[in-house]
Length: 500
Ligand code: HEM
Image (cartoon, rainbow, N blue to C red; front, side, top):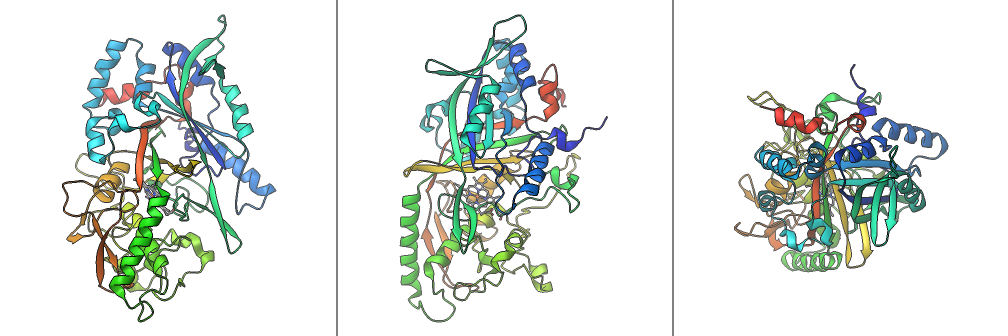
């Protein structure tokens, strides 16, 4: 029988959580696989359909504009280490298998700590990752999202979470046995939704102060049903998905300082602050060029270049998700489009333009699903971003970055390596992404091109980088719900091993 995709897919993949707090528990499995599987089977993982039910129910009760629901969403993701523990008790056999899988070329099987993967993303060496648990093998990531911390803590008790001295462990009661130890929580993180209120409207932001959560990959059609073409971007044939988790520390103080320096340089090189269409608000103009959106979310590609007013009304914020940078559409006069092939309006190094070159096909950026000679559709480099900010102190804040996709190498890694970390773009030497690009030392220049005037070919160079540092992370699989009910969750890995 064909399984219903929404009862199979874990919550949080096709739609964001919409919860104020998200807790992350990094688990090391202990004990034998029978015990671990038993624990997995009784976990009440939230499905995409349950999430929709909660949302519909909540909408009937509340004004859904700033939708916050208090019901806890429970998700579990498993790393390659975890999957191998579920597949094979014998450590030697497990290691042999790990070796075989590393050769498969799949980034999930390699893991984020693999030398080649670190090299490609230009990530800091593992001995610099902190807290220390990130340097260890992580088997699973349990994510609990809820509006109140108390309800998250209650859910933890149901899951079998216990404190034993300094250790935080997970246990399960099995028939005939007093209780078995399933694993240990080796690390924790807590994310909180950050918001700001402007003109009476409250919206989410990230620690640098930019509006976040605008871009939505649409997985549902107008009738509310999942669209296969779209869900193929994030789901594999089992209705599972691959998760990239990265703790990204943001140096907000240095970022703001460098923005001021960049504005200083802008004022110096333009020296015509109040004439022509040179921005009357240089800081806003620079902030827009860094992200590709002003702090309130308006895309700089659609700005009218004068003063601070954007031609798109703020109430049309959803349309800021759907805009295009495309010659054909711009010439046809489509409302939310703009011809900007060399980055005179939105610099090509701007974060959202590097992350999603939209209709700009020069680099074969987002060709959509296509069939190469192998016959396997290649997903476009589009990801479903599901991160949440963290703030432990003023100096220790950033993003608990999460993104879902069908193939980590072709999606997340393509964006980070080919676009964020790379300097040239086609024939244009544009500079790396100033928000989260990791500079490759052998490249020519760290400097980006900054526009002096909106829509004109006149620019200057300035180096803007190094405000985001990877603290640790891992690649995980988000198994479909039926995997948790099977006698052996390792079906997936067997499938992969059987692949020609
Ligand atoms: C601390 C680091 C980061 C910060 C502060 C940041 C910030 C932002 C902001 C403010 C937006 C615009 C909001 C929106 O469109 O919803 C955005 C969009 C986006 N970011 Fe990031 N981001 C970070 C890291 C990353 C990473 C590591 C990736 C992936 C490799 C990424 C991929 C994207 C994508 C795909 C978009 C949507 C682009 C679009 O379609 O317009 N970001 N980011």
